[in-house]
Length: 454
Image 1 (cartoon, rainbow, N blue to C red):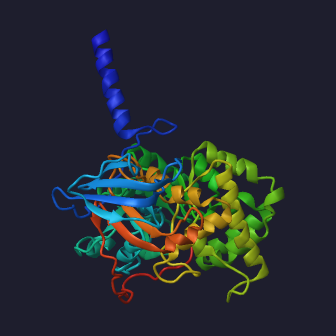
Image 2 (image 1 turned 90 degrees about the vertical axis):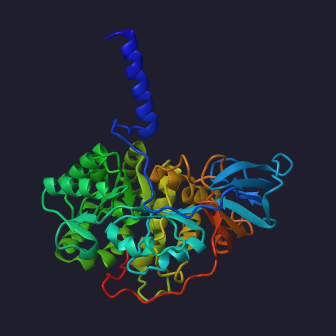
Image 3 (image 1 turned 180 degrees about the horizontal axis):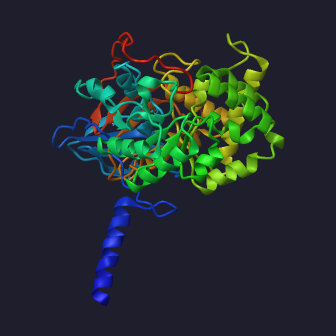
């Protein structure tokens, strides 16, 4: 091959890798996009937010008395007051006594027939959501409603084997060819990832990973019968729910007892997870380090959804072993993060210790309880989520050139993460959102009700 041809090929390769990126094993990693188009601002619209404390989603220190200029749908300037020129034609918004953050990203959101839910979450500061396992058509009504909703990153149904725990959200498969066909079908429809569910055997998880990676999309899993370490070994990119690590950590006889009960009856998972985690002594667990080291080595992203499992002494269904199990889930999440594991924020939409619409801030509070600092939890909620969605080139931080998805909260969440419950203004794609909470409709009777750990 001539030098000229080699140089031309090198340019093509660089362009391809820049557009798609590559994973650790060289598989294609294409950028991922939402399936809806947020409304665009009026032509020539310029907004300057002044005086707020800026927490930009990166590891940079917060900026006091900041100025952020938004031109159209993008961030045009960021800096301290006096360092950033405020355009004469800008609408100036006073952010004094408030904190300005990137729009929050929910990595584990469920619609479950409540078409008001995306709008409610948007007004809590969540500007992007990822539903890891629902038919894309389930969002048709929401997408066509014309009302402001977060950016929708959708998968299609999760892959499972019969008897499925959530049959209306499942794509039932029995062999590798059905898995491959299903992955290609849902990616062709706009799915940005693939979710494997707890009855899917390891060989079919591997088929899902191989096919999805060929198409440039990641695979995440809610695991129970397959150990997380085995799923990581065949290429899974993310783990849904901290409980998915339980069978990799517990003693073999406890694991077999749990798995036998789940094989017999899906509902055995709910009490069984707490019992399994309640047996753990994480300070002296011989498997803990190797499990975490493997996940860190493979850059496996954990979406712990702690809030959906929250169980405290005094709760109606609380037992000593159950409460101990939940505290171990909290502790493991902190250990995972401190060891270098990637953590993102997923609300699960409805959780036992938060009122309707408040699951996301509750998850942030629990991540801080697990050992993350407020700054680390907020980064997990913003830039780390965007990286996981492979859209961090345009979302996840307050930086010049990125889309103007912004949140103003009263107070300082770096001092008290509960300030994230005090969202005052939300901007989506350069447009301020009407903060009136939409009326909550009744559950669609045709949709399956949410169950813990879905």
